[in-house]
Image (cartoon, rainbow, N blue to C red; front, side):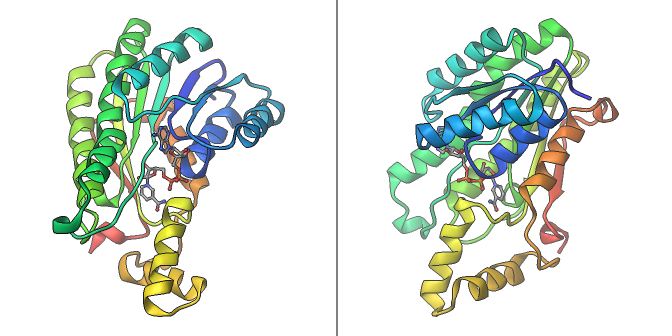
Length: 260
Ligand code: NAD
């Protein structure tokens, strides 16, 4: 369906981003991977995508907490891939602490990666997409882009910011063939959440699986984790022709979290 399209997925060396990159490659798109991690493992992932899907896959290890690095990565990807059709702003981190104890450096880093990188990446991608008259910007926000939880102030602020920025992007790009939307996942069992399950297990004296069940019970009525593959399918849908008139909105994939 997306054969020949060029897709950049930030934070795609693990978790949701990796599943999204694989989802686009499975549709025939060439992909630019990005993220941190062990170089050998990343190379195995990159070459595995090329082998499994018969597409071109590249990797850029830019640290996206720096705005110029985000812009350089996106422009470099457009050059390497020969075009730029889809940007998935996915890279994100978490830190939990009460506001009056929240370390300033953690706040700055979360805002830089989870929010400002979305601005810089979008700013760099829009000229390429507008020139082509077609583009898709898919921002991975969160249920925490729609509602809050205690002790996640920086993350909640950044993700609400992403939802607002997505709307502004959609309005500015309207009529150019470029859409912008945000996906708002509930709990997905990735490294980012496993750390929180471990912390809950330690604080309540539970084993890891009991803590995972408690985490779900608190927020996610379905009592099941969202899978990275379900989010990949949602991102691919937003890049499809069927979604051409979906812009400036949020798609919650959260097992009912934000319905109550
Ligand atoms: P993850 O920790 O598995 O993946 C995060 C990715 O971001 C990795 O590839 C990592 O290398 C990359 N990354 C981290 N710091 C970076 C930096 N400075 N520069 C470039 N890349 C960097 O986490 P995940 O759960 O897959 O999260 C992906 C996105 O989904 C995040 O934006 C997160 O907020 C969002 N999200 C996750 C959940 C969940 O339950 N897991 C729920 C809602 C939203």
